Structure formats: C-alpha cells, structure tokens
Length: 358
Ligand code: KG4
Ligand code: ZN
Image (cartoon, rainbow, N blue to C red):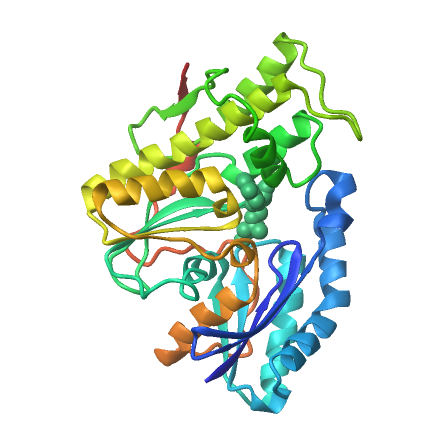
C-alpha cells in the first residue's frame, strides 16, 4: 500500500511516500527556518504563505523521488492538527483535492501521533505497553500507550514546551534560531553543574512538566550576573557555555524525572522518545541509560525523522487506514486536536497554580 503523507502544521512543508507504513520511498522536507530566523520564532502568516508556495513542488518532488506516479498512490494521509491554522489549512486543502482527484481514501492524522510513529522506521516493532515522550517546539507530553492506537496523557507541560524553552533561552543568550541545536553544541564544552537552575514542582502533586520558571531563572541569572549575549560572529564565552550546559541538564533532568516516575508506576515494555528535542544527544544518552537500567528498549527516530516530516504522518495514517478509518471531504484542520482516547483530560489543570521549588 503506497501512502502519500503531507505535513504542514508549523514551519516545514513536507511530503513523503511510504510503503505499507514502514518503508520510506521518499521524504522531502522544505524548511522555512531561514524565513523565520529574523523574527526569532515562527511567524504564522509568513508560514502559511510559504506552505502555499511549496506544497505543490514538494509533493511533486516526493512522488518523483519515490519513482512512482501520482496514479500509483493508494491513499493520502495529512496532518489535521494541532498546529497553526493557516499552515494546517494549506496541507489539508491540498490533500483533500488530491485524494478527490485520484479517487483514493484520505485520512487525517494527529501531528503528535505522527511523532510517535516516527520511530517505526529504524527500530524493531514497539512492544506494548509503551511510554512515549514527545518533546518538540510546540509540545511536551508523556503518553501511556497500553496498546497501539490508545493514548493517555500521563504528564504534560503546564506552560512552555521544552523546545520552546530551548529556543527562548537561545534568544536570551544571543544565539541563532532555533536555539535547541546551538545550545546542545555549546553545552558540550560547558559545565552542566556550574549553575543550579530550578525544577518546577507542581503544587497539586501531578507529575507534570513546567519550563517557564526555568526560563525566568535563566533570564534572572543573565541579568544579575551581567552576562553579555553572544554578538554576531563572536565566540561564545565560557560563562555562556556553562549556562547552556546547566540549562540543558535541568531540562533533561526534569523530563527524565517524570519518565522514571511514570515508568515505575506503569511498567512499560518500550520507551519512545520523539519530536524535535529528541535530536538532543544528551537527552538520548539519559534515556538510553535509564532504559538500560530498567531493562527496556528505548526507541528514537533517526535524526532527520525527529523534527517535522511527512513520513511519520504516512506511517500513522497507515495504521488508521488499516483499521478502515476514512476522512470525508468535510474534514478540516483542527488546531485543538488532542491525542488522548483513554479518559477525559482534566480541563481545569492548566488553570491551577504552579509553585517553584528553588
Ligand atoms: O518537532 P519539531 O521540528 O517542531 C515542532 O513540532 O515543534 O521541533 C522543533 C524544536 C525546536 O524548538 C528546536 O529548538 C528543538 O526542536 N530542537 C532541539 C534540538 N534540535 C531541535 N532541542 C534541543 N536539542 C537539539 N539538538
Ligand atoms: Zn512536530
């Protein structure tokens, strides 16, 4: 079964052709990072317009690179949400028109579920129950996955996503957008124990994440110690490298503390770590070390599948298509789409207070 995956939820226009949900025949990603760099983050209107320019050439390229023709496709899978509305609408509208024109089934995919499926290409099959840590620029969630396709959020961020914290701290330090990869590079030559940054303690006792206090702590440290951000073309100072290393270590500690807590309670047989922040080598090492300690495998996507791509959307779409799920042409982008089909979310949670333990 040949599925065309389409992804346009944020700032990557991507298309991929995947056979039987497991074999990537092509994966084309057109990144808009350069367009958004001057703004220090994704500018939604600019993103939507760029998707409009790129979607057709990217799909054409993906089909050609797979060595197939459009008429060979058996189905189209597209990211339905969550994401930026203008960006999502471009992919969804294009996918609907294409599926209609080809007379093939269409399926809408949750972007976060796509990240979960990004591990299927380079790892043995996932054994359930699994725990899936999805850490990206827009999301930080830990899911309990008792069986394929069933998800329960067991830990979520109350404020910023981990990747967002990397990007914001990068900005404070005068580093290029996105901050994650640059901070990781600087952290390699910095001292992660130099500065003690706080890990948020959630006052209602839930094992959730919170990164906004950490971001504020870094900002305060920079102000109180008169740290000068890195200027263009300048070498980062030892102090900047220590801040990067200490910040990164705190984020990883915070992520792994909850993973450990929930793994002890839920006894998963696989740990999945995916999303843009899963590119981070130090996070990978910490997760590997933990997996080895409790005797379960840890699956990561290969690095080019960690950030947004369409192969993961086709893989998740394959699962739903196999179950007979089809979207009709009334399907539309849904920015609020959640990935939880076991128990309702506690809607009040976000409004509750977060206390920081310093
Ligand atoms: O999954 P992704 O491409 O987009 C979203 O769905 O958000 O993730 C992008 C995020 C950015 O915040 C970026 O800074 C972060 O992933 N990231 C990293 C690394 N590479 C990318 N964070 C930490 N270390 C990295 N090496
Ligand atoms: Zn993503």
